[in-house]
Image (tube, rainbow, N blue to C red; front, side):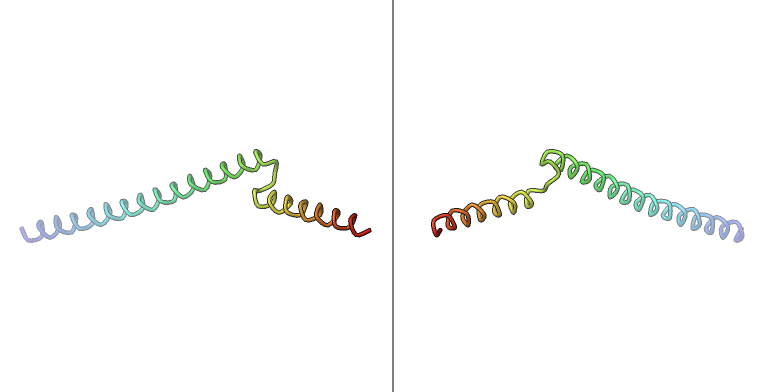
Length: 82
């Protein structure tokens, strides 16, 4: 009788460990799948924004506009000084 109960206890321990191991692996899989989906969504948003902005980011457009304004100011001051 003692051998049977020991075997059952060992079997329950092994089954419990296997279940917890599977649960851990599933949890990691869910995290990995979520991270991959998030990265894909972010990449899609970036692609859409890039296509809407004509391949330039908002900061690039702002810098270009600032440079144009500076050039206009320089040109007008040069004309006045000549």
